[in-house]
Length: 76
Image (cartoon, rainbow, N blue to C red; front, side, top):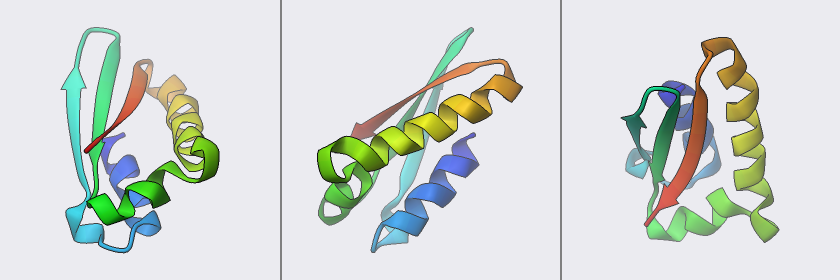
């Protein structure tokens, strides 16, 4: 899941080398923290949060196969 998020974020941003994902695992839910360059923050969030919501929808759809819930947080 972490690799999927990295690939999606790198495709969106201008500086793909700055993309970092940290996974904090729990028993049923894992939190994925996404860090990007400050100049790319708007691209990841999108207009009215549409891009980040689309990424969250993809993670939710894929997490069904993994049998685990994932939550995405964007960290500055």
